[in-house]
Amino acid sequence: MENTTPDSTTPSSSTALDEAKILQYREKLRLEQNLPMALAAGFAAALVGGILWAVITVVTNYQIGFMAVGVGLLVGYAVRYFGNGIDSIFGIAGAVLALLGCLLGNFFSMVGFGAAAENVGVFELLGMLDYSYVPEIMMEGFSPMDLLFYGIAVYEGYKFSFRKFTEAEIRQNA
Image (cartoon, rainbow, N blue to C red):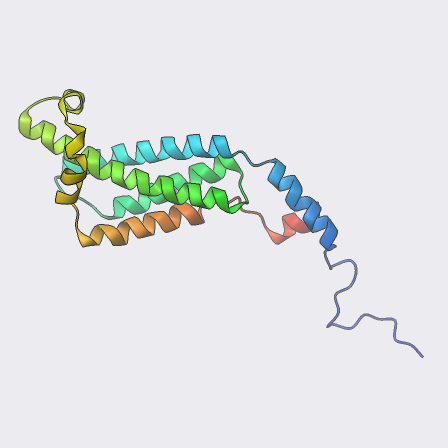
């Protein structure tokens, strides 16, 4: 007599996902991606994160490395929410924009301190600034610990930039 009951080592047809349906679902998700929107939102998040970083740094008169963590999270979530991306370009965009947000945070902090020292407004100082000195100024305020926090921000910018979906969602839609 033949055993018609599926054994526990082979998936039944009701639980196994059809590979063709999974590929079809992935293509559906790819059509929902929006890289230009992800880039715009990620850039806006990097700018806002950099400004918040600078405000907190200037107000407290202390550079808090964890601000980079916040910038990475903010950028990653903005890229994810507005981009709906599943392709690697979304993670790369999130990582690059998170790094940009960190650099902007440090730059805006230096501008804030400079404006306070010269007793001028931030925008006035930005208008007077000789931007050829920016790399030199940035290197002056750089510390090796910055690399650690920038690295964390880049990692978070990458990691949190991808659309999340569960196995249940895949099973339901595939």
